Length: 277
Ligand code: 6GU
View 1 (cartoon, rainbow, N blue to C red):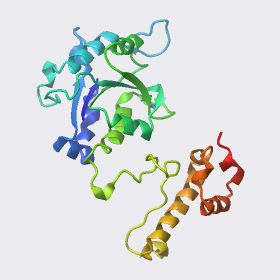
View 2 (view 1 turned 60 degrees about the vertical axis):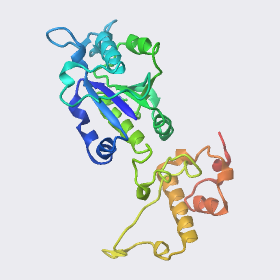
View 3 (view 1 turned 45 degrees about the vertical axis):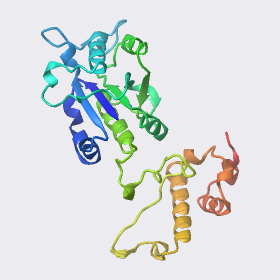
View 4 (view 1 turned 180 degrees about the vertical axis):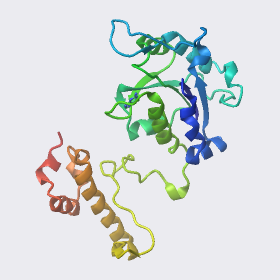
């Protein structure tokens, strides 16, 4: 997968060279280019924003630098100041990328979106700051490529950079070969499948007793059936306590008799599991 990021703060993306995503890049499973929006300004002050039309607080990003940046990045040409190793280089893996515009007014990014976007060959992230990017930029881009506005949750960040890091990490760890066998993504909380409505329960390692606290004996029993059942019990308990909305409206046919027993112990009204909304 190729990812291009357009931003006025390239330094935000230094963590992409670390750990999992650094290794994915070294192994060429992922190619990331980070581009400075100001490279596509033409005035002495490298202006990227102006006052909002109609008045109001803050500043709005100008559509023209964004359009020039997107045109340049998507035609494979790199700007002069990026010759020093920042350019993703190489031939794009698709004719046209999907443009992601991170914004608190976008649709909420979920594990389903991470799974869907991990199947794309080429993504471009347009990181707005201030009060956002002039809406005509996304309209214009949409005549040339698919565009989606995405938020990472119901709170407001200072710009799209951190949200972009979050989305890229969620996507990159799903790319084939990025996670080792030992850290498979299929069992994650929220991963598609039978357990997608449950968060994961607690985990333990060595020593078996630490400061008088035991690892639950079933985990040391070697009985895989009993271990799986215990893990599901704990996942159900934690979901009721921390994320009841994940269970609410969930199809009751996915719950067995033991599930219902555990939920009842947690004080979960059995009738509400059956309310499919
Ligand atoms: Cl994508 N951007 C900003 N600025 N704030 C956010 C967000 C994005 N998602 C949640 N809050």
